[in-house]
Length: 81
Length: 231
Image (cartoon, rainbow over all chains, first blue to last red; front, side, top):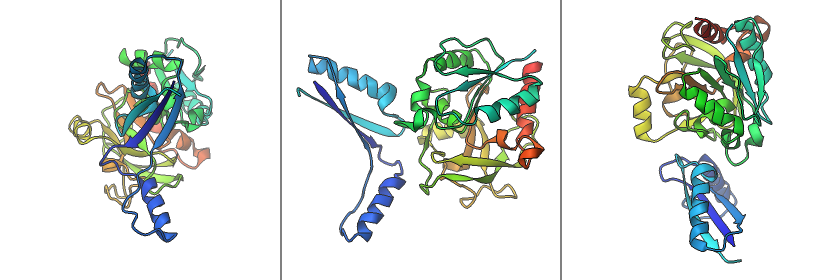
């Protein structure tokens, strides 16, 4: 099965890259962009067969390595294919 | 005879400068220890150098913090062995939990490579005791991710615990926004752990520790460490 991990900056953590992207979008003429937050997307192929077990394991991976929980939140989605 | 180890990761690029600065202060060269080693000889000082360990993949210092040798570094730090992390070394120390906070992308998004002024906030540590308290020293920075950030509670703990070793400052020592090169909270350039035996800092004292390099403001740090571990 696959795990999709989204890692995003916590609220209140400044995101200068997101701000630069927002400014670029505005200068390209895309109006109405009220905010941009940049994050990471990580896809894992897992040998697990139990979705609950897989989710717990990937959450541990996020705590230990994939995310820095001082500044980042993460979400884990497990899918069969 | 006091001994030192410099940890070398794939992508470290200040390891030799660090070895020269430490070797010059100790009178003999430190051991260079490869990141894949799982055993660290008994030493009196562990130095984690600057560079781009593991290509800064995922986050600066994140991969290095989980390399085999770091388990040993964390264990020895827990037993009171002095640990000095400079630049990427500071990032590694935050990622492995020996120091709090995180070094985020510079607020201006640019890699900054220039000399800055930093104020010595404490001179009662083994790392800084050869500086005057409040002294302003000139030290180079060279980083993309030096923007120190932490949550308000941790920042209060650092401030209240007197654990801020260096702050970016103006040439007269004033702590100003203009003197903050990278957006770091409270102009923080270097911090200590609670026990005072682990220090992390973004500026590079090893790069100005010999007259041939154009300055010696970094040298007292290495002489202080050498004296501390010799006694």
